[in-house]
Image 1 (tube, helix red, strand yellow):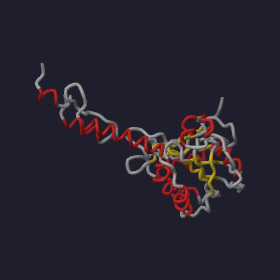
Image 2: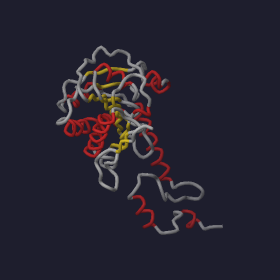
Image 3: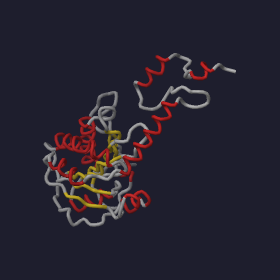
Image 4: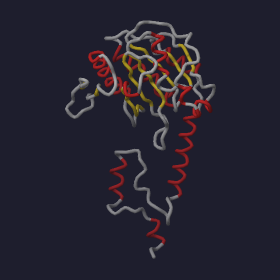
Length: 265
């Protein structure tokens, strides 16, 4: 039978330096050790705290008034707000289909711009509050010299596909949906971008491109995400569509910045 001292030691055959090196490359929980047959108490409490933070991120309501002011300060025009058909957060979580449909698009006006922005709370309003203003500013800088940009639309109780309805009302050629991603036990404030070229209701997920894990300083930076988007927008315009035929190579080892366009057979 192992001694009490041995039972409390981490299962670490390569030494503590081994786990410290790996922890520098991931936010995953690795090499936690054990106390008897269980995790150490500090790690159990940290896991519970992370779970609570993830739940809070899902249920935290978006402060629309404050957020609208932050987005207006980016300088792309006065944002308007729309909602999905989900009446509240509880219904939004139970009925994903309602989050994909608009309740009323009257506030949205047609612009005919090249690119439209939809800022959606998604499954982490916290992520939208924390990162959308900075990300939107980076996107405006990256895209503004080559494309016309529509004033942003804020969408509450929103799923990705709601952006297709909003984009059709805006009359834009490409829509970028900035949306709070599902929180995990390592990151509760990750933001994603879904790009759809020639958007319309009924577009499938295979017709979109996604840039995810945007949450500096630990995730993708705003500037890097905007750089990827710019390449994908250029590729989508050349190809005439977005989705599985359009590949991003901006972060490839070759250093290429041009997206790979794969023609359909």
